[in-house]
Length: 303
Image (tube, rainbow, N blue to C red):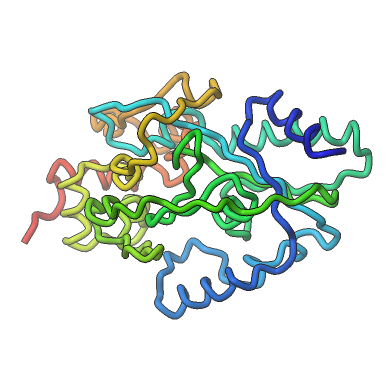
């Protein structure tokens, strides 16, 4: 199968931002990850074994390429939203895997011995680094991947496979370095040198299981974020005049705000049933309710 045919199959499923990354161990990434570990820029959610994060052949011994793609999810601005935009539509874990499974079935019709493993924010490899290597986007100072068409409002997913698709090169582009993301980051997590301290990121804090400090609670109250944070993306000039998502899964049946009264009235079981197809549901009702209580000043006060 040639590259044009591969891109055609993806386009048939509504995906037009696709590239192919190599599978050799990523030595430059290894240096970055070691440096992050030494600086303790970790949340505990990462794969601990660095070799698993830099060597695709530990996933598939006969891997020959990695197909990387971006799923756009931008649907516009909602002033009363208290959750991240990536949570508005259907859970991207469900959507991306379903679409990529169907794509792989199409590929298998033309490559009968096609072997593959699909990942969408659940694999050991660093998806943003793969997006960079495959040329579908470039890094912003806030560490997000920026695409030409959709800005940084994209989910990244990839297929490790045993077919030697022609590899792409990374883009010779860079972000504008306006430093707005650094200036407006509530927790001062963005350091201005393409590094972030994820422990200070408000999105991480809203998902943190451990008890929040008074400083972290204050951040939630001041910014009224119940789950996730988009501030560094909202101020980014690369996200102006971008295309809306073309995927109905992310543009219909939107939930743009979590209602406090609704959460207080339902059980944990009902929460799972009602929101099972939303990306914020994985943390459960308890964390969502904690954040809502903090924002409405039902918990500790600032001092």
